[in-house]
Length: 199
Image 1 (cartoon, rainbow, N blue to C red):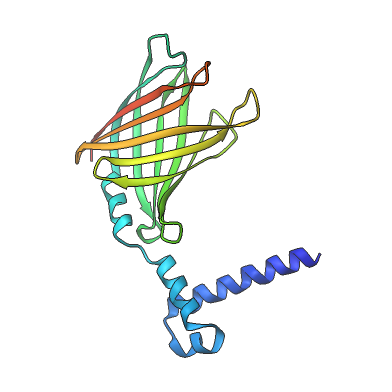
Image 2 (cartoon, rainbow, N blue to C red; image 1 turned 135 degrees about the vertical axis):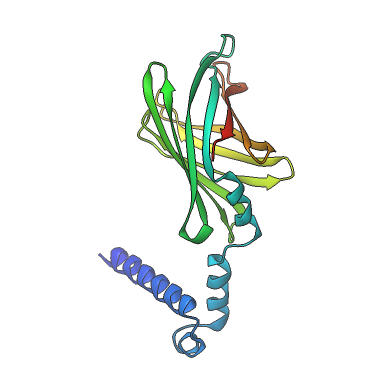
């Protein structure tokens, strides 16, 4: 019981600090908390240059995808739609993927943001072919986004790491790649997707 009371108090305190920071009332900040703490919360909450990169990924796209279930076999090829828009004042990007995969309808939803505190990009992925959530983190440089993800393997129940790369050959094209461990444990390219902007 004490643990839940402590958690509730912590959540309430964080909410109160956020309200004070957004209001920008210096007198209240002095009365309810350390000004240095308020400044840290403001810095954590304010979108910056890294969030500007997310705007490039928003829009509507048609995609073609190749996926290799077996690294020694030819890839499966599918097509579909990708839509993406900014959330919460440009702090996050949400993308939705729809298409056909192995004879069934595929739907997936991803989020991508930049964590000012952790100083890295962070993402999540869910789809209708699993009940888990993939979490990822990484960087963005001149060659695009490079992320590392973790998800549970349905066969073993253990965490499996994956590697993702997103580049933009031009402002209307996205090229996504994903690598996973193969049957021998070595990394191989599991998927590549080319998205062409339609609007």
